[in-house]
Image (cartoon, rainbow, N blue to C red; front, side, top):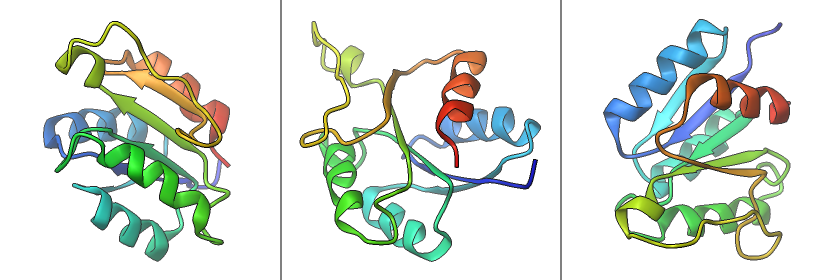
Length: 128
């Protein structure tokens, strides 16, 4: 497998490090950004094969906003995005989120904490 790059946009350094460990062990190159602004900037610089995106960063809705910005960019619009979030638990929501082409244009939504084998399964399903 040629090295594929995954961009993690997440403000939790411990989570980023744990995911980095799992994915690097599988041969993926991991880049990260702590918020949506830096994430969009880095995505434009490196053009990753896949983006892993948190919801709650500097704002509670930041990940949703980033997910809707990516399709507007000619270079980034074809990059698959997997949202990984703990928002349901943090906000005590009785419902989850489903991908939607308008409001949540991502390939999948995974709940934190995610088991490594489930994460790898989704990454391998969508990575280009």
